[in-house]
Length: 271
Image 1 (cartoon, one colour):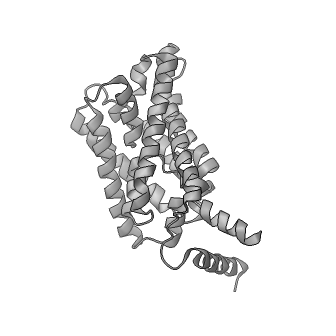
Image 2: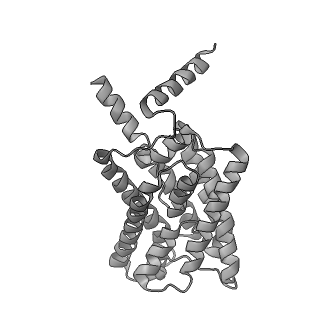
Image 3: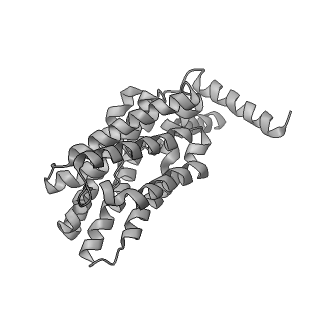
């Protein structure tokens, strides 16, 4: 038996011993506040970067170029996964949280708190941008491009989010989701999607990223596109993940929920 196979078997046995045979369900209230804070802070940073690119570009007379604004959100997501993926799973997106829940990698009882944290973080970022720059650049709102119909933008958001969710679920296999491969894959997908589809729909793929600027600026004329599209795409992504890989796995649940409780149990066990 190879060393890697032996180590992998030991790791699976350790996880089963600590978390049980079924998909783990981390409900320790002493740790939940950290996960909620992580989702709020992470979503704040993501929306600050994604919306802030357009805002700062408008406020600075175009010193922030289109290339910069489309690359920045992907790089921010990479950084967030690295620094807090182990805490909350780094969802940062209601569509991702719902996808994990439908996939049965995440307990439905924890969904409302995650969604509330994401909305609070995204709205806080939009308010922060307004306080600094006023209404420059429509507060970074995502809008259909010139000559693009709302239905075309909706379809684009649906397809792009399906691919994003497939990328996230496909790398949600324990350490890969919270380590280098997951961060690079998810961040890289976001950059790639922005590079070619930004002129069509603004490339949101995240209801909160679009809802927060619309809420603060008081314009909901196109908000439905960026809520309905990503949510529909997320469900398609879950369906495709089932077709590709079958039932959910324990490793996927650990990736979706982070390893905070697992680490805390081990710490206490070694004390």
